[in-house]
Length: 321
Ligand code: AMP
Ligand code: MG
Image (cartoon, rainbow, N blue to C red; front, side, top):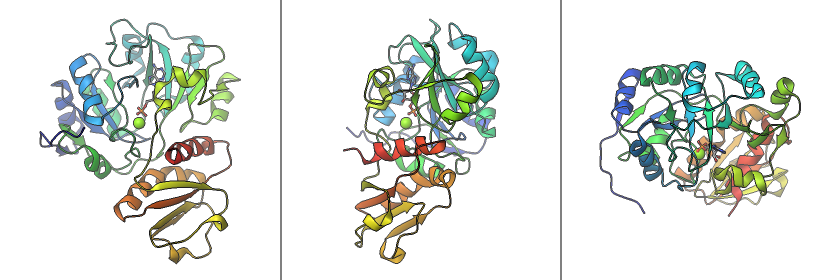
């Protein structure tokens, strides 16, 4: 249920001002290299609880813990397996979340009762300045209302959460556009629970074989977030392989790598030059289509490798009903 707007949401471009809200137990949205996050102090459980309220997030969906430095890892993880250490050396800071055994001091509301914790060090400069100023681990899911496309601009955060959170740290448009890769390092080989901005190929380059989780099976149970419908605009999303399959009518949007025949027939049409741009622009485009009143969006799938794997995953979830 929607609850009424209760507070003024302060906008600031100062990471230290934003951090002062978080330290007082309030919620702060902040930019990262993937999407905007909605942060609370890991060690203030009521603040963490209010993340679920503000987003309308199911209580069984654990939060990722964001850190400024590797020195903070032992405060939230009971143990760091060798493989995880190698991955941290190579990909941190960056868009990789490692699932590690949880430190007993981490409140269970953060991990939705699991005995593991997701840990990531963002590389975005403002995010790092903010996390340093917070001087505590920060639990943060994406800063959207649950189910909606993740926010890639501060305006998109405001669209979903104005009145529900204390502060938005304003930054530019995010660089990757898709979320971090979630990798379970408590098993051997490690398992990709959510494909994301670090490709499976890049992970394999460092640690050899990794397994890619089956989004329907055991791994879905291990990563509760992947069970929920996600990333969806109000418009219905139809996946296509070639734009020839597209039926055109006034309130239809199109996004893809191939140029459709009659571009002008679409209300919103975004032809992207490559998979990186597609990933960066997808959620932004979804929100644009909603604003312009599209009722249907045709989205072209891409080859299922590299970043394409994460992009296809987001497309499939957005199209799921
Ligand atoms: P979000 O931050 O909204 O992009 O969602 C975080 C994702 O990380 C969800 O898919 C969660 O299920 C997953 N995640 C976070 N912590 C854990 C954990 N301890 N074990 C498994 N998956 C996790
Ligand atoms: Mg999310």
